[in-house]
Every structure is written in structure tokens, then in C-alpha cells.
Image 1 (tube, rainbow, N blue to C red):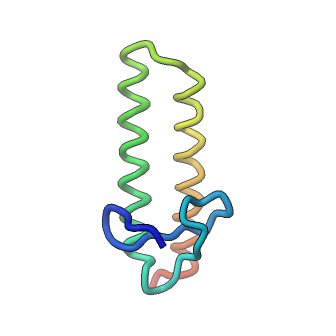
Image 2 (cartoon, helix red, strand yellow):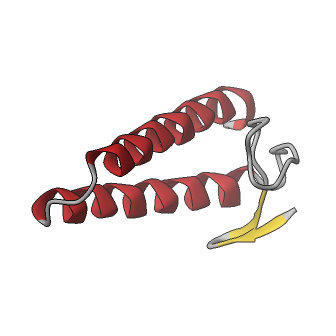
Length: 81
């Protein structure tokens, strides 16, 4: 279990930092944490684009956002009340 921005966080992905499963009890905290992470990554991409930074890094951030969005979609179907 990992302490995220909004509570105890765990991810479904086998590549997740926490290596634990999302449960009904931690779903809301996980959702908020993933949303905050995606927002940060989007802001990072925008900043990098405006300042001529490495496109490879921006592409990696975009892929990470897609992965988080996929996790959220899966979790939403499984745990939303």
C-alpha cells in the first residue's frame, strides 16, 4: 500500500508502483490520486511543449496518462456504486 495524495493508494496495473490491488475501500482515494497524477502529467507536457523540451519525454508522459485513464475506466466499471 502506498500513501497517495488523497489516501491509501494501490493500482491494478502489474506495472503499478504499489503492486497491490484496488479495492472497494480504497477506490475513491485511488481515483482521486490517479486524476491528480494525470493533471500533473498534462501540465508537465504543456510546460515542456512551451519550452522546447524532449519530445520523447512528453510521449512517455502521454502514454502514462493513457495507462492511468485505462486503469480508471476499469476501476470505475468494477467498483462504482
